[in-house]
Length: 316
Ligand SMILES: Nc1ncnc2c1ncn2[C@@H]1O[C@H](COP(=O)(O)OP(=O)(O)OP(=O)(O)O)[C@@H](O)[C@H]1O
Ligand SMILES: [Mg+2]
Image 1 (tube, protein in one colour):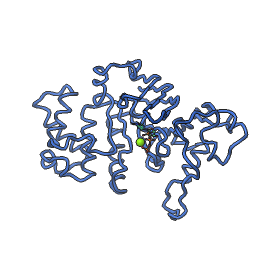
Image 2 (cartoon, helix red, strand yellow):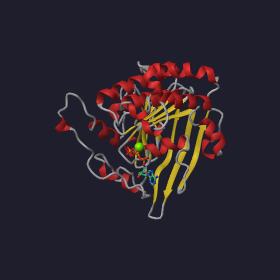
Image 3 (cartoon, helix red, strand yellow):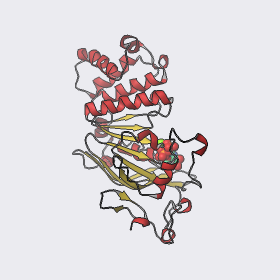
Protein backbone atom coordinates (compact mmCIF):
# COMPACT_ATOMS: atom_id res chain seq x y z
CA UNK A 1 0.00 0.00 0.00
CA UNK A 2 2.80 2.43 0.94
CA UNK A 3 6.35 2.10 -0.32
CA UNK A 4 8.96 4.56 0.85
CA UNK A 5 12.17 4.29 -1.13
CA UNK A 6 15.48 6.13 -0.67
CA UNK A 7 13.92 8.97 1.28
CA UNK A 8 16.43 11.73 2.01
CA UNK A 9 15.78 14.97 3.86
CA UNK A 10 18.15 17.91 4.16
CA UNK A 11 17.32 20.87 6.43
CA UNK A 12 19.19 24.09 5.80
CA UNK A 13 19.08 27.32 7.77
CA UNK A 14 21.51 30.23 8.17
CA UNK A 15 23.29 28.41 10.97
CA UNK A 16 23.81 24.91 9.63
CA UNK A 17 22.80 22.05 7.40
CA UNK A 18 21.58 18.73 8.82
CA UNK A 19 20.64 15.44 7.19
CA UNK A 20 17.98 13.98 9.51
CA UNK A 21 16.75 11.29 7.07
CA UNK A 22 19.20 9.33 4.95
CA UNK A 23 18.27 6.77 2.35
CA UNK A 24 15.28 5.47 4.31
CA UNK A 25 13.21 2.68 2.72
CA UNK A 26 10.32 0.68 4.17
CA UNK A 27 6.82 -0.39 3.24
CA UNK A 28 3.44 -0.81 4.89
CA UNK A 29 0.77 -3.24 3.71
CA UNK A 30 -2.96 -2.99 4.28
CA UNK A 31 -3.73 -3.90 7.88
CA UNK A 32 -0.07 -3.90 8.88
CA UNK A 33 1.35 -2.13 11.95
CA UNK A 34 4.87 -0.82 11.49
CA UNK A 35 6.69 0.89 14.32
CA UNK A 36 9.66 3.22 13.95
CA UNK A 37 11.76 3.44 17.09
CA UNK A 38 15.00 5.15 18.05
CA UNK A 39 16.36 7.78 20.42
CA UNK A 40 15.25 11.38 20.35
CA UNK A 41 16.40 13.30 17.29
CA UNK A 42 17.19 10.29 15.07
CA UNK A 43 14.77 11.37 12.31
CA UNK A 44 11.57 9.45 13.13
CA UNK A 45 9.18 12.39 12.96
CA UNK A 46 10.80 13.85 9.87
CA UNK A 47 10.38 10.47 8.14
CA UNK A 48 6.73 10.26 9.21
CA UNK A 49 5.98 13.86 8.22
CA UNK A 50 7.35 13.30 4.73
CA UNK A 51 4.56 10.79 3.99
CA UNK A 52 1.91 13.52 4.03
CA UNK A 53 4.54 16.11 3.07
CA UNK A 54 3.92 18.03 6.30
CA UNK A 55 7.59 19.09 6.22
CA UNK A 56 7.39 20.61 2.75
CA UNK A 57 8.76 23.94 3.99
CA UNK A 58 11.41 26.53 3.25
CA UNK A 59 14.87 25.13 3.92
CA UNK A 60 13.73 21.50 3.55
CA UNK A 61 14.85 19.38 0.59
CA UNK A 62 12.99 16.07 0.36
CA UNK A 63 13.97 13.51 -2.27
CA UNK A 64 13.16 9.88 -2.98
CA UNK A 65 9.94 8.03 -3.75
CA UNK A 66 6.83 7.62 -1.64
CA UNK A 67 4.48 5.39 -3.59
CA UNK A 68 0.94 5.12 -2.23
CA UNK A 69 -1.69 2.92 -3.90
CA UNK A 70 -1.77 4.19 -7.50
CA UNK A 71 0.10 7.41 -6.77
CA UNK A 72 3.64 7.08 -8.11
CA UNK A 73 5.27 9.61 -5.83
CA UNK A 74 3.68 11.71 -3.08
CA UNK A 75 6.85 13.82 -2.90
CA UNK A 76 6.24 15.32 -6.33
CA UNK A 77 2.47 15.85 -5.91
CA UNK A 78 1.14 19.41 -6.14
CA UNK A 79 -0.66 20.84 -3.08
CA UNK A 80 -4.17 20.29 -4.44
CA UNK A 81 -3.98 16.50 -5.01
CA UNK A 82 -1.90 16.26 -1.85
CA UNK A 83 -4.68 17.86 0.19
CA UNK A 84 -7.05 15.19 -1.10
CA UNK A 85 -4.86 12.50 0.43
CA UNK A 86 -4.08 14.25 3.70
CA UNK A 87 -6.67 13.27 6.24
CA UNK A 88 -8.97 11.31 3.97
CA UNK A 89 -6.49 8.63 2.77
CA UNK A 90 -3.57 9.06 5.16
CA UNK A 91 -4.48 10.46 8.56
CA UNK A 92 -2.18 11.81 11.25
CA UNK A 93 -2.63 11.39 14.99
CA UNK A 94 -0.45 13.79 16.92
CA UNK A 95 1.35 13.58 20.23
CA UNK A 96 -0.59 16.66 21.30
CA UNK A 97 -4.31 16.27 20.50
CA UNK A 98 -4.71 20.04 20.75
CA UNK A 99 -2.64 20.31 17.55
CA UNK A 100 -5.48 18.61 15.72
CA UNK A 101 -8.33 20.30 17.58
CA UNK A 102 -9.47 23.86 17.06
CA UNK A 103 -9.79 25.38 20.57
CA UNK A 104 -12.58 27.75 19.56
CA UNK A 105 -14.95 25.20 18.02
CA UNK A 106 -17.22 22.72 19.75
CA UNK A 107 -16.10 19.10 19.33
CA UNK A 108 -19.15 17.86 17.43
CA UNK A 109 -19.08 20.79 15.06
CA UNK A 110 -15.42 20.39 14.14
CA UNK A 111 -15.55 16.65 13.56
CA UNK A 112 -18.63 17.16 11.40
CA UNK A 113 -16.74 19.80 9.45
CA UNK A 114 -13.84 17.41 8.76
CA UNK A 115 -16.29 14.74 7.68
CA UNK A 116 -18.10 17.03 5.26
CA UNK A 117 -14.82 18.24 3.78
CA UNK A 118 -13.28 14.81 3.23
CA UNK A 119 -16.08 12.29 3.13
CA UNK A 120 -18.96 11.84 0.77
CA UNK A 121 -21.39 11.97 3.65
CA UNK A 122 -24.67 13.92 3.38
CA UNK A 123 -25.10 16.89 5.72
CA UNK A 124 -28.16 15.45 7.50
CA UNK A 125 -26.40 12.11 8.11
CA UNK A 126 -23.25 13.73 9.46
CA UNK A 127 -24.34 14.26 13.07
CA UNK A 128 -25.30 10.62 13.56
CA UNK A 129 -21.99 9.49 12.08
CA UNK A 130 -20.01 11.84 14.34
CA UNK A 131 -21.87 10.43 17.35
CA UNK A 132 -21.18 6.89 16.17
CA UNK A 133 -17.45 7.65 15.96
CA UNK A 134 -17.39 9.28 19.39
CA UNK A 135 -18.92 6.05 20.68
CA UNK A 136 -16.39 3.98 18.74
CA UNK A 137 -13.49 5.71 20.51
CA UNK A 138 -14.95 4.85 23.89
CA UNK A 139 -16.73 8.08 24.81
CA UNK A 140 -19.86 7.38 26.85
CA UNK A 141 -21.36 10.82 27.50
CA UNK A 142 -21.58 11.64 23.81
CA UNK A 143 -24.15 14.44 24.10
CA UNK A 144 -21.94 16.40 26.52
CA UNK A 145 -18.73 15.85 24.54
CA UNK A 146 -20.45 16.79 21.27
CA UNK A 147 -21.24 20.23 22.67
CA UNK A 148 -17.98 20.72 24.64
CA UNK A 149 -14.98 22.83 23.70
CA UNK A 150 -11.66 20.94 23.59
CA UNK A 151 -10.27 22.59 26.77
CA UNK A 152 -13.27 21.26 28.73
CA UNK A 153 -12.01 17.68 28.20
CA UNK A 154 -9.17 15.78 29.88
CA UNK A 155 -6.02 14.90 27.91
CA UNK A 156 -7.18 11.31 27.41
CA UNK A 157 -10.59 12.45 26.18
CA UNK A 158 -8.99 14.96 23.83
CA UNK A 159 -6.85 12.19 22.37
CA UNK A 160 -9.94 9.99 21.89
CA UNK A 161 -11.65 12.86 20.07
CA UNK A 162 -8.62 13.44 17.85
CA UNK A 163 -8.60 9.72 17.00
CA UNK A 164 -12.30 9.90 16.09
CA UNK A 165 -11.54 12.88 13.90
CA UNK A 166 -8.64 11.08 12.20
CA UNK A 167 -10.66 7.94 11.51
CA UNK A 168 -14.06 9.32 10.51
CA UNK A 169 -13.01 9.81 6.88
CA UNK A 170 -12.06 6.11 6.80
CA UNK A 171 -8.40 6.49 5.90
CA UNK A 172 -6.36 3.45 4.81
CA UNK A 173 -3.24 4.52 6.63
CA UNK A 174 -2.84 6.16 10.03
CA UNK A 175 0.39 7.80 11.14
CA UNK A 176 0.57 8.04 14.92
CA UNK A 177 3.65 9.96 16.09
CA UNK A 178 4.14 9.33 19.83
CA UNK A 179 0.35 9.40 20.33
CA UNK A 180 0.53 8.66 24.05
CA UNK A 181 3.63 10.44 25.36
CA UNK A 182 1.54 13.27 26.84
CA UNK A 183 -0.57 10.80 28.85
CA UNK A 184 -0.07 8.91 32.10
CA UNK A 185 0.73 5.20 31.99
CA UNK A 186 -2.82 4.00 32.58
CA UNK A 187 -4.27 6.32 29.94
CA UNK A 188 -1.45 5.37 27.57
CA UNK A 189 -2.46 1.71 27.84
CA UNK A 190 -6.14 2.52 27.22
CA UNK A 191 -5.43 4.69 24.18
CA UNK A 192 -3.08 2.09 22.68
CA UNK A 193 -5.69 -0.64 23.20
CA UNK A 194 -8.27 1.58 21.54
CA UNK A 195 -6.02 2.25 18.55
CA UNK A 196 -5.19 -1.42 18.08
CA UNK A 197 -8.85 -2.41 18.37
CA UNK A 198 -9.80 0.13 15.70
CA UNK A 199 -6.84 -0.92 13.55
CA UNK A 200 -8.19 -4.49 13.46
CA UNK A 201 -11.80 -3.47 12.98
CA UNK A 202 -11.02 -1.11 10.09
CA UNK A 203 -8.05 -3.09 8.65
CA UNK A 204 -5.93 0.04 8.88
CA UNK A 205 -2.29 0.27 8.01
CA UNK A 206 -0.56 1.97 10.93
CA UNK A 207 2.78 3.70 11.21
CA UNK A 208 3.48 4.15 14.90
CA UNK A 209 6.41 6.26 16.04
CA UNK A 210 7.94 5.94 19.48
CA UNK A 211 11.24 6.55 21.23
CA UNK A 212 10.23 3.78 23.61
CA UNK A 213 10.40 0.19 22.37
CA UNK A 214 8.25 -1.05 25.25
CA UNK A 215 5.32 1.02 23.95
CA UNK A 216 5.15 -0.72 20.55
CA UNK A 217 6.51 -4.14 21.57
CA UNK A 218 3.10 -5.64 22.27
CA UNK A 219 1.41 -5.03 18.95
CA UNK A 220 3.68 -3.93 16.07
CA UNK A 221 4.14 -6.48 13.30
CA UNK A 222 7.42 -5.05 12.08
CA UNK A 223 9.88 -2.81 13.88
CA UNK A 224 12.06 -0.33 12.04
CA UNK A 225 14.99 0.92 14.11
CA UNK A 226 16.51 4.31 13.24
CA UNK A 227 19.82 5.73 14.34
CA UNK A 228 21.50 8.92 13.16
CA UNK A 229 18.98 9.48 10.35
CA UNK A 230 19.29 5.95 8.98
CA UNK A 231 17.46 2.68 9.31
CA UNK A 232 19.86 0.31 11.05
CA UNK A 233 17.49 -2.64 11.25
CA UNK A 234 14.02 -3.83 10.24
CA UNK A 235 12.82 -6.95 12.00
CA UNK A 236 9.75 -9.05 12.54
CA UNK A 237 8.44 -8.21 16.02
CA UNK A 238 6.49 -11.46 16.18
CA UNK A 239 9.73 -13.44 15.99
CA UNK A 240 11.63 -10.77 17.93
CA UNK A 241 14.96 -11.74 16.39
CA UNK A 242 16.75 -8.40 16.34
CA UNK A 243 20.44 -8.36 15.46
CA UNK A 244 21.90 -4.84 15.43
CA UNK A 245 24.08 -3.81 18.43
CA UNK A 246 22.01 -0.60 18.66
CA UNK A 247 18.73 -2.53 18.89
CA UNK A 248 20.26 -4.76 21.55
CA UNK A 249 21.27 -1.65 23.50
CA UNK A 250 17.74 -0.23 23.19
CA UNK A 251 16.24 -3.48 24.46
CA UNK A 252 18.53 -3.31 27.51
CA UNK A 253 17.13 0.16 28.23
CA UNK A 254 13.53 -1.03 28.16
CA UNK A 255 11.72 -0.80 31.48
CA UNK A 256 10.76 -4.29 32.67
CA UNK A 257 8.52 -4.78 35.70
CA UNK A 258 10.91 -7.21 37.43
CA UNK A 259 13.91 -4.94 36.92
CA UNK A 260 14.51 -2.38 39.70
CA UNK A 261 14.44 1.14 38.27
CA UNK A 262 18.06 1.82 39.31
CA UNK A 263 19.18 -0.93 36.92
CA UNK A 264 17.64 0.83 33.94
CA UNK A 265 20.34 1.95 31.59
CA UNK A 266 20.71 4.64 29.01
CA UNK A 267 23.01 3.90 26.08
CA UNK A 268 26.39 5.44 26.95
CA UNK A 269 27.85 8.11 24.67
CA UNK A 270 26.52 10.89 22.47
CA UNK A 271 23.93 10.44 19.73
CA UNK A 272 25.18 10.85 16.16
CA UNK A 273 25.54 14.44 14.98
CA UNK A 274 23.15 14.84 12.04
CA UNK A 275 25.24 17.57 10.44
CA UNK A 276 28.01 15.04 9.83
CA UNK A 277 28.52 12.90 6.76
CA UNK A 278 31.05 10.25 7.74
CA UNK A 279 32.53 7.20 6.07
CA UNK A 280 32.28 5.13 9.30
CA UNK A 281 29.23 3.41 10.80
CA UNK A 282 27.09 6.04 12.56
CA UNK A 283 26.96 3.91 15.72
CA UNK A 284 30.74 3.33 15.79
CA UNK A 285 31.54 5.51 18.84
CA UNK A 286 28.92 3.82 21.03
CA UNK A 287 29.05 0.25 19.73
CA UNK A 288 30.30 -2.50 22.04
CA UNK A 289 30.83 -4.99 19.20
CA UNK A 290 32.70 -2.83 16.70
CA UNK A 291 35.26 -4.22 14.24
CA UNK A 292 38.12 -2.36 12.50
CA UNK A 293 36.12 -2.22 9.27
CA UNK A 294 33.31 -0.29 11.00
CA UNK A 295 35.56 2.78 11.15
CA UNK A 296 36.76 2.45 7.55
CA UNK A 297 33.51 1.84 5.74
CA UNK A 298 29.87 2.72 6.06
CA UNK A 299 27.77 -0.46 6.29
CA UNK A 300 25.01 -0.96 3.72
CA UNK A 301 21.67 -2.61 4.51
CA UNK A 302 21.87 -6.37 4.12
CA UNK A 303 18.84 -8.60 3.68
CA UNK A 304 19.30 -11.78 5.73
CA UNK A 305 17.81 -15.18 4.85
CA UNK A 306 14.98 -14.59 7.31
CA UNK A 307 14.00 -11.48 5.33
CA UNK A 308 15.11 -9.12 8.04
CA UNK A 309 17.29 -6.19 7.12
CA UNK A 310 20.32 -5.08 9.07
CA UNK A 311 23.02 -2.45 8.54
CA UNK A 312 26.00 -4.00 10.31
CA UNK A 313 29.31 -5.61 9.30
CA UNK A 314 28.79 -8.36 11.90
CA UNK A 315 26.28 -9.87 9.48
CA UNK A 316 28.29 -9.58 6.28
N1 LIG B 1 11.85 22.54 11.59
C1 LIG B 1 13.08 22.13 11.83
N2 LIG B 1 14.14 22.92 11.59
C2 LIG B 1 15.40 22.51 11.83
N3 LIG B 1 15.70 21.29 12.30
C3 LIG B 1 14.69 20.46 12.55
C4 LIG B 1 13.32 20.81 12.33
N4 LIG B 1 12.53 19.76 12.68
C5 LIG B 1 13.37 18.80 13.11
N5 LIG B 1 14.66 19.20 13.03
C6 LIG B 1 15.83 18.41 13.40
O1 LIG B 1 15.82 17.20 12.70
C7 LIG B 1 16.36 16.15 13.49
C8 LIG B 1 15.41 14.99 13.51
O2 LIG B 1 14.23 15.40 14.15
P1 LIG B 1 12.96 14.46 14.36
O3 LIG B 1 11.90 15.37 14.85
O4 LIG B 1 12.68 13.68 13.13
O5 LIG B 1 13.48 13.51 15.53
P2 LIG B 1 12.68 12.33 16.28
O6 LIG B 1 13.41 11.07 16.01
O7 LIG B 1 11.25 12.39 15.94
O8 LIG B 1 12.93 12.72 17.81
P3 LIG B 1 11.91 12.71 19.07
O9 LIG B 1 11.92 11.31 19.64
O10 LIG B 1 12.54 13.69 20.01
O11 LIG B 1 10.56 13.15 18.60
C9 LIG B 1 16.62 16.76 14.87
O12 LIG B 1 17.99 17.07 14.96
C10 LIG B 1 15.80 18.02 14.87
O13 LIG B 1 16.40 19.00 15.68
MG1 LIG C 1 9.55 12.92 17.01
